[in-house]
Length: 276
Ligand SMILES: Cc1ncc(COP(=O)(O)O)c(C=O)c1O
Image 1: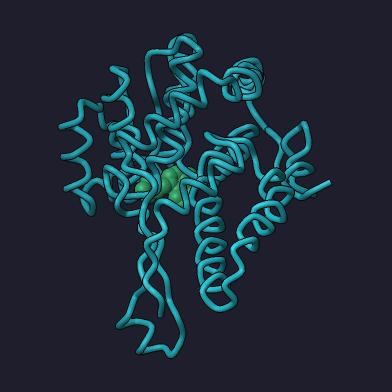
Image 2: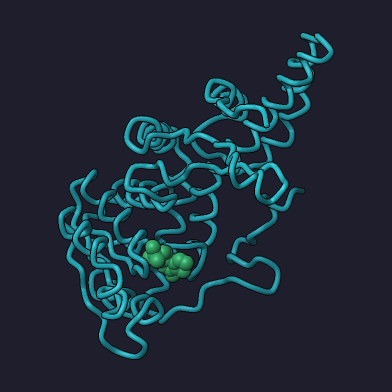
C-alpha cells in the first residue's frame, strides 16, 4: 500500500507523530469535522463545486515558470510553480476554499482561524466573502503592526481581526486564542487552521487540499517529458503508453477534484513551460 494510503492512520498518526490531543469538550466537534471530510468532502457534489471554484475563482491551474535569471546565476534549471497567482496571492487559498466549502456542506456559517504573516487570514477572509460567511481572524499584536496591509485587506473583505496581546503576541498565541474562541461557538463555526499542523483531521485535510499543486506539477512534468520524447523519437504511441504507465502512480494520490486521467489532460492543456 502506498504512503498516501497508509498515512495518516485512522487516528491521524504519521508514524510516531500526529493524532489529536484536545480538551474533552472539543473531541466530538473534531470527530464531526473528520466524519464530514471523509463523507461530504469526498462526495461528487463537493468535488465538482471545488473543481469549479479552483478554475473560475482561484484561477487554477497556475503556470509553471522557468526562472531564466536565477537559473543562470545558480547554474541549474529552476522552475517556479506560480502559486502566488492564485486569487488573493498565495497557495493558502487552496485549502481555505476547500475548508470553507466543507463548512458550508456541514451547515456552518462562520470561519475562525489564526494568522501570522496574514496570508492565511486574507485567504480565509476571501473564502468567507465568497460563501457569505462570518469570519474571525486572530492575530498577534506584533504581527498586526508588521503586516498592516494584510490587516486592511482582511477587514475590507469583512473579517473581524482579533488582536492577541498575551505571551509573545505572535502566531503561536494567535493559534491558542483562535482555539479558545472556537470552543465557545462550535455550533455555528469551523476552525480552519492555516497549515499542515494541529489536531487530526487538519493535517490530513490540508495536505490533501494542497496536493493539487504537486499533482498538477507532476502531470506537467510528465507532459513535458513526453513532448520531448515524441519529438526525438517520433513515437506517437509513447503518449498512450505513458498515460497507461502513469495511471497507477496517480491513482495513489488522494482523490481530489479530478480523476487521474482528467488531471493529465488538464496539465497538457496548461503545459506552458518553455524549454530551458
Ligand atoms: C499554524 C499556522 N497558521 C497559519 C500559517 C500561515 O501563514 P500566515 O498566517 O503567516 O500567512 C502557518 C504557516 O506556517 C501556520 O503554521
